[in-house]
Length: 235
Image (tube, rainbow, N blue to C red; front, side, top):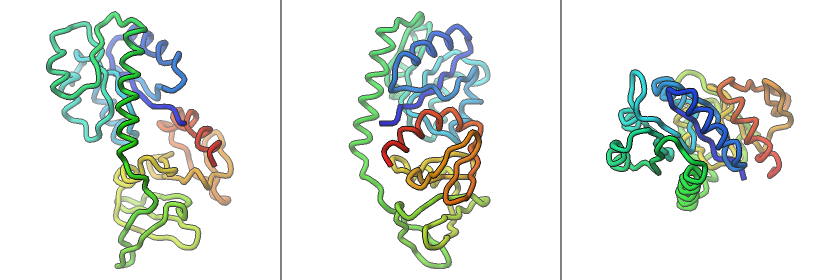
């Protein structure tokens, strides 16, 4: 099973160190990025969805509660704060848990287990996606995901490279990524989604699929290093 992904958003270096240390003790979690302000994290999450956010409330430029309201996707959120008075506001926004600083490891562990249970329930409710319907060349095509080798964005369009032909359809990469959640197709670059079933080789900066070299984006590198071995072992 691939590890769950998380990010840390906190303006204190000490808080980052504590949380990163705790996360490193859990094999089923990987921290893919750390941020000192919420605006940078918001931009990152437009491209790379994660399973869990450890979020401080008192942040420069954009506070944690306002940040939650801006999110387009719905990851699990664990608030990490030195102030208890924000707890009610946090739970009104459906956060998974609320940790008071200084955070004890046993309390942190309880919060991650709670988030994991919620993620498992969400996965169980989702129907396994085997195909997608796309419009291309003026027609509606039913595309089996097992036939998709990779996808490449061209502006607001996606070029789908299939085993027998190629299709161009009107989707952004982020929209397509959202449709493909829970499948063997994962995003590896701002412009590329690959089917892990067709990967022949993974290099330092590229993935090879049928002699085509696909770039690995810098923001995706750490995440891919952790999840690709799990996908490849299943194929």
